[in-house]
Image (cartoon, rainbow, N blue to C red; front, side, top):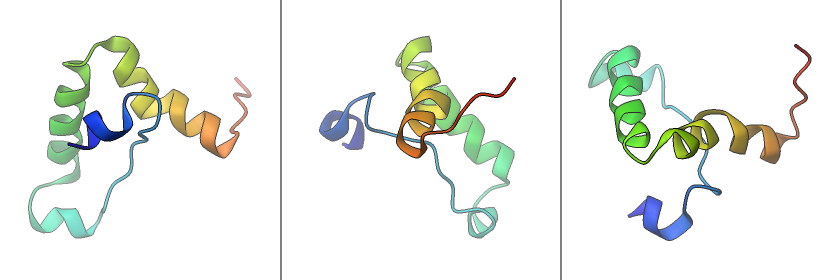
Length: 63
């Protein structure tokens, strides 16, 4: 529902860690989310896990 409401350009990764550990370990939760977004394509996954957050928070890549 969130994907259809906001699309690939308006979603950013966030977690509820450490509270989420009550349901599953962090790497399991992230793995499930990664699997979902990679199913949307590499561009969508990159935007969700990196590019959209950089744009919203105006992060500068200093590498």
